[in-house]
View 1 (cartoon, one colour):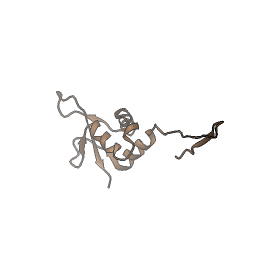
View 2: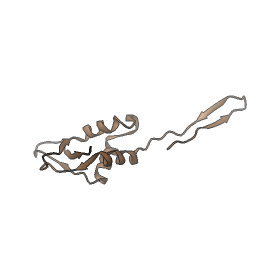
View 3: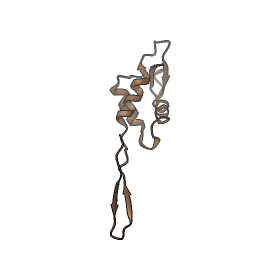
Length: 102
């Protein structure tokens, strides 16, 4: 979505450009994940496991890193029915398993 910039002239004829920057990429994050990955389980031999930080890294290779947070990616994964799996009880980081759509 492109938002046109507004030009406002000051009394001294100085022109300032004001533009609204997009900072919420929730829809784009969901679309990116939904179009490229399918939820899976650890039992699926074709599935790959990644931490939330790794998936966030994949997303910010496409979308602006400044405005995409781990929490945004986690929310999108939950909405798209991705589940967290722990490989061992001692492990603190959960793994998301998914299939890559080619």
